[in-house]
Image (cartoon, rainbow, N blue to C red):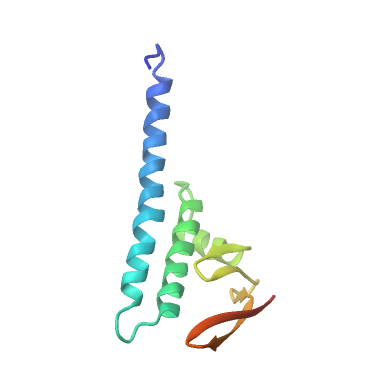
Length: 121
């Protein structure tokens, strides 16, 4: 579709970039996560917490891209002000001291399978 001002071409480039980002983040990342979490000595919980940390860091760094920001202060403030961040293992927030607040999940093993019991907030 041709336009005289090029707005369609720009929109198409933006949509293509978003599609590539979504494919990378949603398509490749979980595959790598599950492949790496099966390594000896590395539990799925270790991998999930690492993935959450990575995701949180990317999230707050994207908030601190303005040229006049003090990046260290901005990242620290952004992490401490994060509320209901959706991570791999659920939603979590941070209090004013920077301590993570998350719900507790209680499971049990039944016939060799993990069985969810309750989630306490």
